[in-house]
Length: 436
Image (cartoon, rainbow, N blue to C red; front, side, top):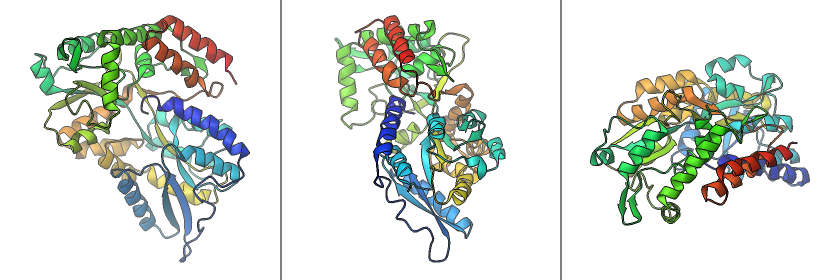
């Protein structure tokens, strides 16, 4: 998931629980009012997603059309619900008794919805052997009390995109991207272009892109997130060292320069990596579509996120999405058939080929690599290879709001308002007190 979304997602979920408990209205896009059968007797399955962009909506709707044409018992109807609204509306509609039949859910909070009886137990409708088609770490995320409450659809991982033209210009070997944090910082300094104290090009800045401070801290700490299950790993020596590195990096670039660049990013202008204002950029594989569609003639390479130290692994932070049946859905059996289709090799390959997205189906991912060529193949092959070192960090049941307590302390440390060790110690103390 992109930087900062995990924290906001958990907060959204908590707010939604309160909203749904109090709501007597529909709040769910009129799912209950939709027809349950077509004129020719097909069962209508209402599917909600937030895939409404010009790139993704045609892809998901083509997949739905293919499913509808593949059999004569079910008609799936797609409703686009914006990212900021979909989970709030889903939980409110579950409480009101009129949910959709299938919804896209966050992979790292499946067990919360299962525990709170907001999603259906899919083991009643789908044979567990489906897990053999999917990446094992993704399947682990949908299990709760020995049953499964979602089927993985996509996952993600971060790549290091680097400007080979800038590398040549700076006297660096364009075929040797940085392997460690030390090399990353060394390359970045050579790629910087300054006029006085002002940067015309920043070689690299750690928290731009979609690999945020918590991800760097997990990378440094052997891939461990702030939690492994219910076990806390917040104020560890490695995470403290990583946060200090991030804070020192911000000091080196300068607060004014960081803010000036970030203000420009937020203005809707071309991505700074694509425009040449940043030479190294960490982002998900689907970032390639932005580069491609920009028509830039930049020569770029991709590499794994550098290891904390020589000889260590290139730990990555992952997220993703699952398909779920909300609790109280009118057609769970038919919804499950649609979910099985969407997790199958054919549908998953189509999604991956069109979006360069990491999919959950292993055979589909391998097949895509074989079919692509050139830069497309380089990007997707690296994305799939990255999954070996990519960890998911599900939100623990006992500490559902921990990001809202940890992230402010990280921000304060980055801004120099508190030392990294004190920031993480305070965060850990606050999280312990929040245990549910």
